[in-house]
Length: 211
View (spheres, helix red, strand yellow):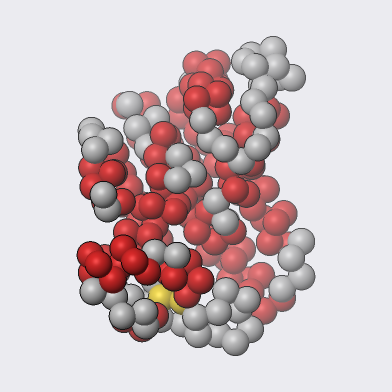
């Protein structure tokens, strides 16, 4: 089953939330790039050659991909994004709870790898738990499961849906910023900070009040 079909099986408004997130990611990433200074190497629509190769069989069978990064279409890239950056890390579990937090997790995962924002989320939830007084702390293992989702719901109940979302966006941004400035990659630091920090506005959290 293709990743898009798996996503559709989730039902509800999840597909629309993910489609909007991917639209923003595509806008941010642009098209084909092959910067020799970028350790990610050859990319198209933000997908690296190494990542695309792991999906070669599906892309060849379903879309006729010939292995050329210049020939990687947006539709193919969307298949990879949904599979690797939405479904596998289970960020999809937040899509009908907080679209803004989901956006932040997916976008950060695209740029830094999905395990980092998953751990940042778990660390942030623990930091907001008042040392476990408001809800049990979660294991910081980078695996978003029921415990992580329930902790976020408990934060929503304690602080309100909009406030919970806003504080989580702030904390995720702070941890992502610290990550970028620790990498010692001066050719890319400005672009990362300018485009990846604050790219999910706090106002987007207002939507959570209606969920």
